[in-house]
Length: 373
Image (cartoon, rainbow, N blue to C red):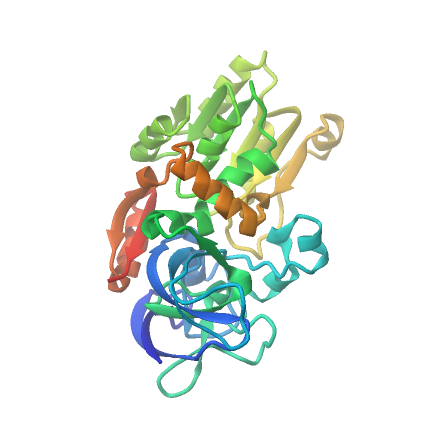
């Protein structure tokens, strides 16, 4: 079938909407009509070239939800009309990592940026009108009116849930929430610093508050984001990490924060070094944000790392297991214990994806959401 999608044709580049030919679903795949897609910073990293991809054009989007329109042959598990939230990280359920409860590290994730089917690196679901392959972001490409995905990437949700809100569970919410609850291991009474309060960091704030932290200190240079952080669980908010560090030390007899979560939009080594300096003995620095993935080097004291027994912890999708955690978070939203509506600052059409990222860079949005007709 023919559909429309927002693609990058080169990096650095700008998203533009084009016509795309879309394969019929094969065994183990479903065709989904998109309802909503979050504008996550990772797709902007594709546009800037911070995250290189294997093929251009490349159709973006990895945080979305929609309605199943067709199921591939011999494919049990989903049916036409089911509502699904996509997990940007697939879960095969069989590899060592899935079997160990670490679905976010599923071996299928090795194919996220190839643009091809996970099980066949020479096979693409999307094509230009003249037959050239179009890469599919994370195997899903939610910046498209229709998409075909593997069952490993789709989580069925209740039909009464608003897809334009729960689409955020496919990346930003679980990544931020899990960075606090899983990766940082926030405990009641902790002092936590969150560096960067965008679509990921605001959910780290929510997670730290829900885990019982006494002090949740948000750091962001944008006043609007600091204000939103205070509304969604932060106890303090500052423009500068230096000021936040001193306040954290004031709460901990000069020791520093129990954990610092780095969710800056474009992470550099200096950010990790600042977080390290703000952390107490035996504390944890969680690095969740992305930057230039080829960059090497973190300015930390090896002696302080060893003698103060500090830990620097990477966090992919907040160490979530999406097939269970997306459903858990959907129930928390239903129960009023997780805020989603408040995260959506503005909605866009598919043709406005590039504008959405301009607004993100201007600091105008916590999360922009593309809503499809």
